[in-house]
Amino acid sequence: MDKMHDWTLLDVKFDWRSACASLTFEDCEAKSRTLTAEKVRLLEIPREDEWGPSVSVNETADGPGPDGVGQMVRIEMQSGDAIRLWAARVSLT
Image 1: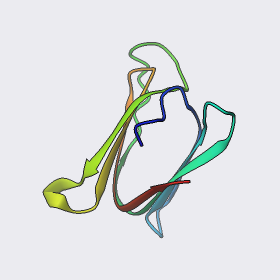
Image 2 (image 1 turned 135 degrees about the vertical axis):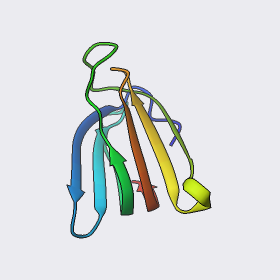
Image 3 (image 1 turned 90 degrees about the vertical axis):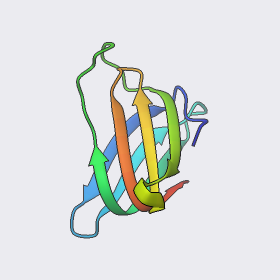
């Protein structure tokens, strides 16, 4: 997930009942891409705009979740905000 720089975040959806999240982006080639997370344990979406308003991704990082359970994803926006996601499974299509 390290190639998301300058992608545009379009939409965030979270289904509480199924604990599934989807984040929709437009990539640098104007293609719609979706990050899907199943069995979400944590979803943080701050919107403080510390660096100024932006809908673009600055950088991403991912790795194992706490205690090696699931997967953690961090999406730093060009606003300075960092979306954090911890789920059993995360995929990008």
